[in-house]
Length: 61
Ligand SMILES: [Zn+2]
Image 1: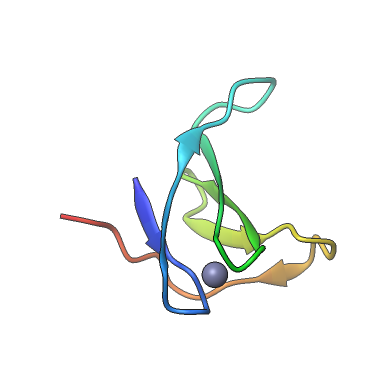
Image 2 (image 1 turned 135 degrees about the vertical axis):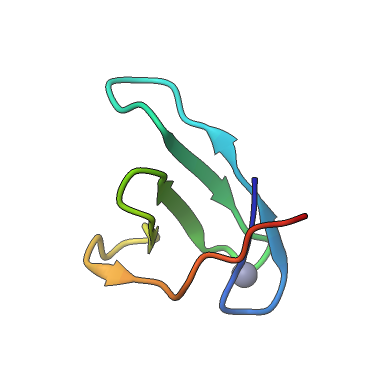
C-alpha cells in the first residue's frame, strides 16, 4: 500500500505486526513516520505528536 506524504513523496507502507491488525506503517524520506489504520481509514503522522491527523488516503493503483 502506498500513500502520499505531505512533502509530496510516495511512502510505501508495510503491515505492522503486533497487537493491532489492519495497520500499516511507513517512513518517508523526509523523516515523517506514518501509520494507517485500514478500519478507520485514518492516516496519522506519528513523528512525535500522536494527534496530528493527516489528509486523505491516496491509494496506489
Ligand atoms: Zn515526506
